[in-house]
Amino acid sequence: MNNSNDEVTLNGGKIEPVPPPLPGSSTTSINHPKGSITSKNRSSWIRRDCCISSPTNESWNGLFDEAYRADVKIYTDNDIIIYAHANILGFTSPVFRSMFTKSKNRHRISIRGVPPEAVRTFIRFLYTSCYEASQMEKHVLSLLVLSHAFAVPQLKRECESHIENGSLNVENVIDVFQLSMLCDAPRVSLICHRFVLKNFKPASSSPGWKAMRTSHPKLEKKLLEFIRNEDRRQKRKVRKKKEKKVYLQLYEAMEALVHICKDGCRTIGPQDKALKEDQEPCRYAACKVLESLLRHFAGCKLRVSGGCGHCKRMWQILELHARICADSEGCKVPLCRKNKQKIAKEMKKKRKRKEEMKWKILVGKILRTKSITGGPHFKLA
Image: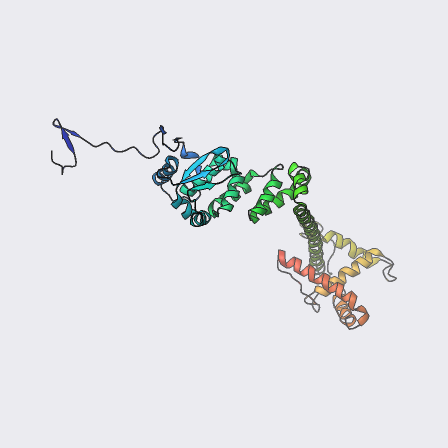
């Protein structure tokens, strides 16, 4: 038989070499002196933005499951031992690396206080950068603690993302909040804050809140302070929204006044314009109210003595227009130029400065409000 041939001939026939099975295709149990593990369905395993090929990933899983030449024993609760490799643990975690460097007994590590399955999932992640979805769902808080304690930021981000996407509820939000403070997870802490804010009554009556009140009263005080500040912020936001609406209505009223005095609207307008009652509806909602005020203002007998509330309102509208009008010389709004001159004289008087400041603030807010929604047609006088 020629050893240089690629094919082996037996009894005149050619026997082609049988290719090895693909990784992960076997469904039989793998026995190992240090423990046995049955290969699982890897389709439920998750790794975000994974660029590792499936065969390579299966090789790393096999190395961990079979514990081939493992030199580290990890002792967990219930006296369960997990075997691992010091080189891999030290390479993926600076905490493990420091432990192996400083400790005399580098082959024994104790991780207690968390479920053994959570420890196994954590160690497997160091090998493969993957985790099983069901294990993450079940042990997300334990994995958050382990990833923080052993400085594994990739797994920590995965845990934070999982908590953010639906792991919170009324029963566990306080526990998660306290854990986020201990594990330096500010994003999780903020999410817990918002969740408590939306569900304050049920959250404040939960067992977790009562336990926090006993064990961490300062933390409860801090959380209550955040809720009060957020409540004030929301009230301030609503108030500003209402104010903005009022300022916008005042600006639209100024536009409607110019529209009535310049172009005319329905039954009221300048004398040189032909008005039609059946014309198309006006685009200014304030026109109808201003039309009534102008008609009343023109014929009111109490206007001179200052005893009419409607006329006082009309005087204020006319003065506000004069303060924001950009062209008082060519403006057709009644008393615009006269009011502008009157305002200029009153600004020189000291006793009127306080009132003038109020008008200036009002005009500035009106113009800024409109400049957000669209370019203003007026300017500050």
